[in-house]
Image (cartoon, rainbow, N blue to C red; front, top):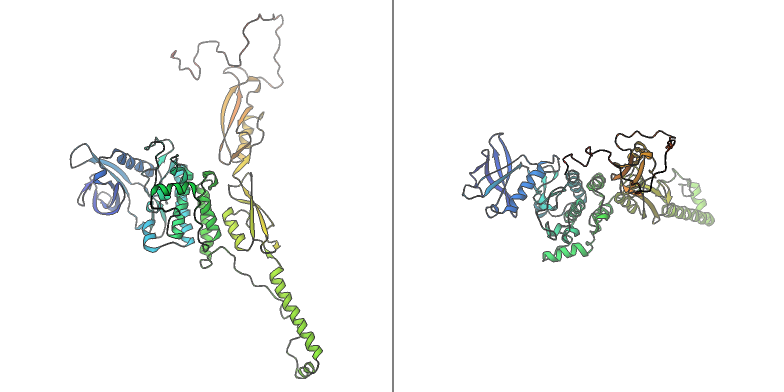
Length: 519
């Protein structure tokens, strides 16, 4: 381990330790070349000879260095030098920006739980960083409060990609090994299965739960007990003072089945951002309930209780019948106002276009029950409300049920067989699907789609395989309406082997699968 007076890579002068983890330490350092302060991550003394620890730091440098995003702590430099203590050990040096702030775990320890608005803002920013990582094929696998930095402005950033895995990389752990911090791992990680992008969303859900309650949902004394709880037990409900929309989003992120979680990090980002904005607009509300509207009353309504003239006072006092009529009318007016308030109906909020968690929060806080149904709809992202019944601004009784149709994120694939390649690709593009083309020799249908996979439905953004007919290389394409002609005087062929559907090479010239080397 380097000491405070050491200079690494001939430019980074180490000053003091500002953070420490299982295998590494982070030092405040000064870059003598660019005259700036930086953070330098090095291995602890007892991990210098650990090949796995060294490889993880190299992975962190490569993966984090490939991401340029405001919600990811980037890498400025990386290098290795020989240990001054001799031997074959090398000292790796990972250089990062020095951030004026603290980790989320430090903030929770010092200040306690966060507000729903602060939590949703953190979730939206971390999800934005995860989205960039996932699009680059990187799964973090160890998201937790200690791996989230918050700068002086409150912006959240992901750090420590030490056990992250690229989609095209070989794992550093054997199959069945649990990777990640037990309090925050997903059920699939706890079961020893491969972590995916959905696993990161689960871990972020656990982090959000901690921010709201101050504790992890499945904290136990033994790590094995925690892992089993992630797999088998439902998370304890969040407090009732947490807005319904926030509770709904976090519980979706904590679903046991990855397929039941939000489709991707971008969906979490958008939903959390919408919730955070709504809560910031009304920070004292504690929920997404719209402000209570006063019931308008007629201006200057005529009543029998208007101040009478002096002479009229005597007549009212002398006539008990008039007093009785006045009392009855006043009572009826009061009852009518109460009936109008209780039974006149409440306008249904317009939630079409909102993420389903946000929509449910608006409706439930307005006093309605909510039922949802999923539908394959083109042009809408998964979880978006596309229809509601009753419609927006209709007046119905409080407690009534509002039915929401929510986009499944899937679309129905039309019948593409027989279409031209260009038309089939265009049809898929309109549905938000990508086309991947392969070919099969079928001269009579050249240019047409022969097969489609999948052929029923696909998730928006997925790839659909099209098999397109083609003619053998060098063969003329048949013209429309052409039919094969019989040659005059052609003799009936002698009996022999049946013709095959595979193309036959008339000469030993190279083919796309033959490099011409003869084996």
